[in-house]
Length: 195
Image 1 (spheres, rainbow, N blue to C red):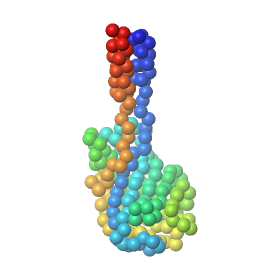
Image 2 (image 1 turned 60 degrees about the horizontal axis):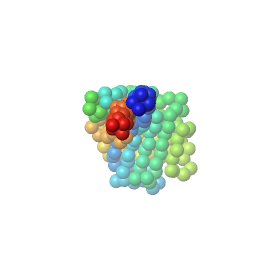
Image 3 (image 1 turned 90 degrees about the vertical axis):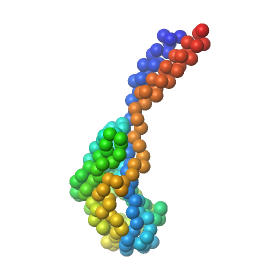
Image 4 (image 1 turned 60 degrees about the vertical axis):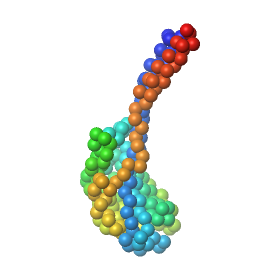
């Protein structure tokens, strides 16, 4: 029986975890809005999706080239806009990186990621909106939509400090150890039945 299970053990051990999207989130409060339906005091949540091809969030660096999505959620779903790669040909400006340490905690965030004149690769719950800009750079005005309607945040400068961002989705760890353990349990069970 052991000889029958040995190939399965090697098969399990050969599996690798796939790289996955990791998301970091920043929360703030609207201080000013000229967008209908949004007002001072309402919430604003920015979620940045990154994928550097890694299989762990430990000691990692994500540059602007790893940016997959930026989702801006106002008033807990009152207005949600998601911008997706390829960013109409690339970001207008890109400086700074998202960086984690040996415990997976953020130690660095972008300092100037932004995109002007976004017209493609964007979904929004807003009606009749055709033009966007977004700025992740600590400037008060960080979101624009058609008609030069803007949103300002209360503590937007905190966006440049890693302590104000949180990890909201984790990259799965390699599955090799779990599958190896499963293989050993199977071998043990098979030997027990033989005895």
